[in-house]
Image 1 (tube, helix red, strand yellow):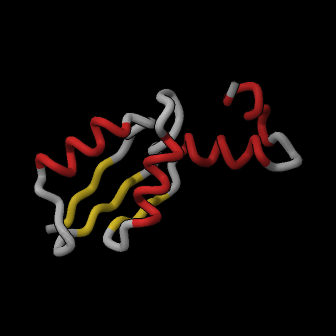
Image 2 (tube, rainbow, N blue to C red):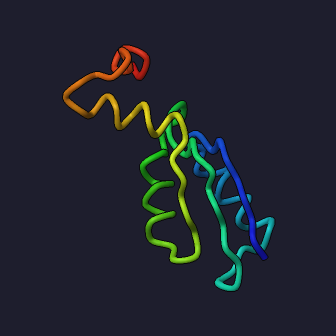
Length: 84
């Protein structure tokens, strides 16, 4: 089965519950269509889980793009202030 999810926003407990409810297995594939981070505290843990799971694919959302923009030297479009 192919699954798609977006806007997880750092809510690891809900993400794990989703995987349990769908009975996500090695025969499935999950596309995370952006916004896995920001707003709640467990975003990095979600990213690690996605990176460590061979049948999950992460696409960047606007929250990941804002994070990357704030880490760069140019502070694109004032994103550092938005990110705070």
